Length: 137
Length: 483
Image 1 (cartoon, each protein chain N blue to C red):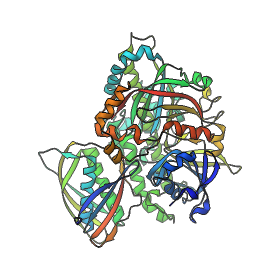
Image 2 (image 1 turned 120 degrees about the vertical axis):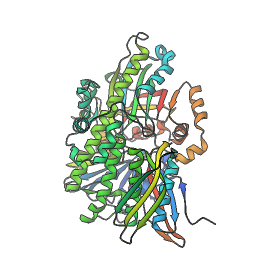
Image 3 (image 1 turned 180 degrees about the vertical axis):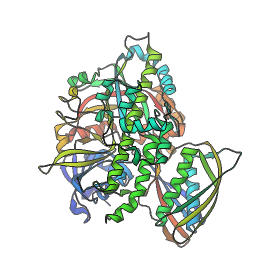
Image 4 (image 1 turned 90 degrees about the vertical axis):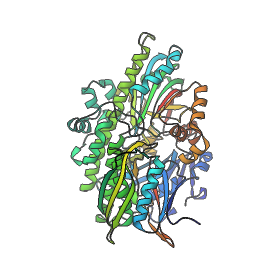
């Protein structure tokens, strides 16, 4: 039986496609972040923890997902930061507040250029939510 | 989903998906490929993505796809689409995140036999002088004021800094500077990402390659370009780095709301767009041009450093170690051009995403020496296989908005390539063939294995057969530097 939360990579000719599933939207965002770090081969430097807060307001679940992951990409590529602890709160109007804890990136295998909206649709399933995200690499 | 049966044969090299295929298509799709290549084309979703692209408002002619096409996001890679001015749309996703990703070719008088003992040292020196790799910083750290100058001036900024010659600029598409760039339309984040990365190669499929000019097909054109059989050449493939990625990310996000404001219905949100004459469209054009100019300056600095590497290794060992510019081309750009469509001369915005401008002989945009032969087109192969130098034709102006292919085109997913190929084994295989490799990551090397790509000779055969380019020379790889 498939776990209630997870991600897996799908074949894509040029880019990366990640399928993510979770019981609700905050968990989906967190799992998508973990998946994005995993396919990039991000490893954290042990040592001093770094905390960040992200607040976002979006029109829908798909925009929120792209914007949240894009914020993480920005922190990864400009500040060399990645996160492994997430506390995500959001309301019905897609207002998000995410408390993140992580550290400086020790190693990263692959660079993601961007999170795309290509065929992006957060879909309900009997177990919660499911989405396929295409990353430009 | 498009199937082989949906394609109408126009010639041995040209096929059409008629507008009747789907009710929301505004124009047909034309693809350049041989019958044999279509089998591979059908393995991914590139043609479905091309059909989706035909739904954009203001399109004229056809949406064109080149034989190196493969599945992308929104538009397929290898796609060309033209929208009419003033009210057709511009779509950041139809240009791509790596704005003005492109290729520069440098030629030389260095004979292969004379350079052969020094190839390994050349690969090491290029790797040293040309920073590469995941998240890597560049050779030049710019201040905010310098970045703004790069945005406005492109290669002209590099010329003022001593990284370029007048001849380099003359032999660069747009002379290395697209007019109309406005740094005020670029976000603070993009500028922060751009400042430390100028003069860097990056990772992924970007590379610097030393080649042997193996065979010349058009001696007159090759002579004008300064390419001679048996001599070395250098290719540089990269783009606008994090600067361009952030600009595209910013505008794809901003345009999500713009499509609602302008009542544009999308079949895929990555196709977001805005009318060219809208404030949003004009802002994106101005920001995209900043990234285009950044990429021109980036390749110029890398060319300057490649020259330093050649001088360090070859000075005193060969007679003339100078690398002269053959041409620099863009393959991810939106450009305002004039074309004749259905007998009507009109200004259009040509979106090229993984496609090369290929203007024919006589085009006033070309430097004087290239007007008799047409625009040089640089088609890199995959690592370990040939690359091609072509020229644009008069027919390309009629058939493909003056465009042709940009490379060999991926066939295999990166995941599958890594599963089938071990990076270290690949490096050994290439070295045993006399190809010197410098790579930041063996996993990254495996993703770019030759077997992950289409046969570049077949791709070139299809565009030449289709009449949208002409062969000038074939290059054979001797050393590859990858991030």
